[in-house]
Image 1: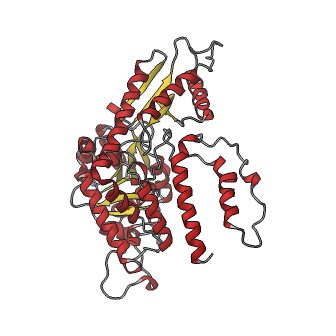
Image 2 (image 1 turned 180 degrees about the horizontal axis):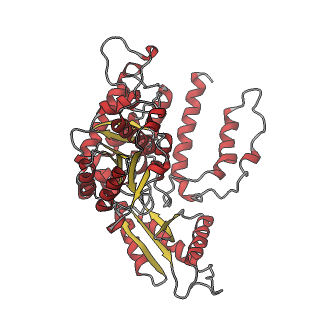
Image 3 (image 1 turned 120 degrees about the vertical axis):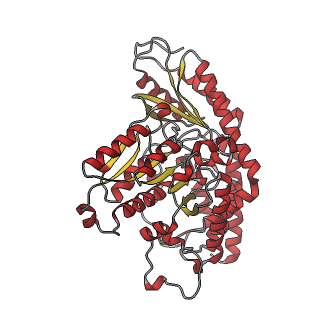
Amino acid sequence: MDVSNFRKWAHRAADWSADYLENVGERPVRAQTKPGDIAGKLPVAPPEKGEDMAQIFEDVDRLLMPGMTHWQHPRFFAYFPANSSPPSVIAEYLTAAMAAQCMLWQTSPAATELETHVLGWLRQLLNLPESFQGVIQDSASSATLAAVLTGRERALGFRGNLDGLAAHPPVRVYCSEQAHSSIDKAIWIAGIGEANLVKVATGDGDALDAEALEQAIRVDRAAGGCPAVLVATIGSTSIGAMDDLRAIGEVARRHDLYFHVDAAWAGSALICEEHRHLIGGIEAADSFVFNPHKWLFTNFDCTAHFVKDPNALVKTLGIQPDYLKTQGEGGIDYSEWSIPLGRRFRALKLWFVIRSYGVERLQEIIQNHIRMAETLAQKVDAHPDFELTTNPSLSLFTFRYAPPGADDLDDLNARLLQAINDDGRIYLTQTSHQGAYVIRFQVGQLYTTEEDVEMAWTVIKQLVGGLSNANGGHSR
């Protein structure tokens, strides 16, 4: 494809994107295909000769779109959002066209310096301590792995020596029962082992209990273990649980633990001053992470990872063979702050989003999402056949259908969720809370309106009418 044809098809891609975003609300939110439906329509072998772009575009619509779940749909209320926005998409076009590999300062000085600057903006927006310095990672999972590895290094003082790890007292990592599964994965990858992940009991509000944490650390130390890392959660994936950073931070400081705070979803709400109390005590943390690609309307992948001591992170992750060494004075080489060597120019889309919307508009959108969730939660709570199982945490709450006389509420709600997602007008997901199957509802998609949330409630009430309870009757 020459530049002339590239211009033609790039314009076509822009038109396709605008049409998609304009009409995505008319599609089923979740893909309605069965396993193998898409693969069965694709050619077994690759083409011997190049095909026409018109045919390729046609096949996107004909073959692939039926199998897409539409995360930019205004009635996507599942998981957490993976938001895009028009300014972010435009920036991604530019990033893709430049295709820079931004591993070192000299491989694109503007990319490195813009990343430093934009992370400085975010630090100001969240009112994080000035001592924090930021880097963009691909995901919160990578940032959590980096934190676990750094905490391991700090505790044991060795580098990449798993034989040495085996010879030392077992490294112990602590988190709450509500913490994300990325912590489990991090301790597997770090060679620490699942047996050394201590999931501490929760107390009021499903927050990690500081007294239980203190006791767990004392027991481990008495048994010859090496308490090393504490991971706090601000806005758990399941129900939006919030740990008390001040209380558990005091424990971490007393026992010299590396203290990491995972606010992957909820962190975006901290741009609103009224929610900054959620990270009271953050000054005790060694690192903090949140995902602009969730609730700050920036395309995946874009994770903001802040650290108090960049030298500890670089000492853990940095490696610079001769072929990567730079001559003369240079800036930050962010590849030494990250697990991968290769780095995309992720800062550009974040810069576009913040400049295009401005802080006030970003705050307004998040505040509206929270208000919409609270309004719907009140309606659910007031309905005699439904019960609110957790109160709204920012824009997330959980509920279940519990009509009088119904048996096996877990099965009933599993069937309700299946009916909701098969219907296609809205998309929800489930979780388990206090041993019960419950349904999650979160508002966070950029294009969601009050009408979309009201439609969701209408759909839910309509679909329960087609369910029968375990006694053989029909719900009302």
